[in-house]
Length: 285
Picture 1 (cartoon, rainbow, N blue to C red):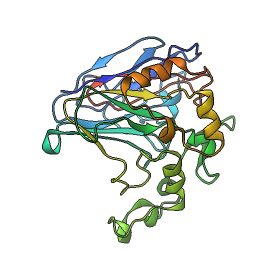
Picture 2: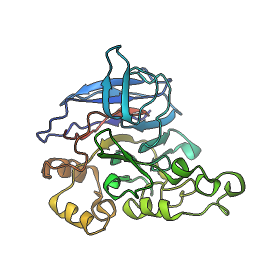
Picture 3: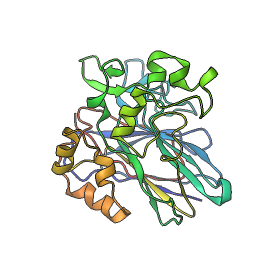
């Protein structure tokens, strides 16, 4: 059975807490993590599900809990098996799948709301490696896909399917097969920024990863170094050029970067869980 790890950023950040969400088979479907806390969740064999981050979360005067991005619609911290309302960056897992392998990916098929990495720990396999999207797609989001907060800040980026509801973007109807559904100019924006993440429904060849006998760290909002920021601002992808080759480098990177994060001004996160300890890096207001 796999485990997932979470790392609260050791930088001096103002965010008060993170919210985690899971699906109904797990012992919890949502909980708060104060800054510096950690939590271990273990999922049963053959479990499958998603992790995602909810941002800009609050409770109203009646106690209804909601988030600007990634909200699950439960009205509570616990998601009770509800999925994220798009757009949301997703970490997807199927444990103990074909050949006894765990299958995992980072998906932008439902859009993007924050950067995210999956880091296998202790597993084996030719394709058992780190994947994710560490780019700031909110800043690079085409205007027709952008989601803004009440004060006009860009907080998420829709998929073309969500924005336009056309079968050629949703890989539906006459476009429901790999032969008929091709990348769109919008999915190519996602793929250029995050070449290891799913950018549309049939983006399997470069975006699905497998491990045997691994635990997993899930890192939300991995900070980027000054050199990474420079590369990103020049239109290059900070994920493909600097994605760590092993978990040791992941931890060093999390500790050695500048405190300015691409996930600024967000309030909280939520995630759909697999089998787990968590590694989450925080944001500023």
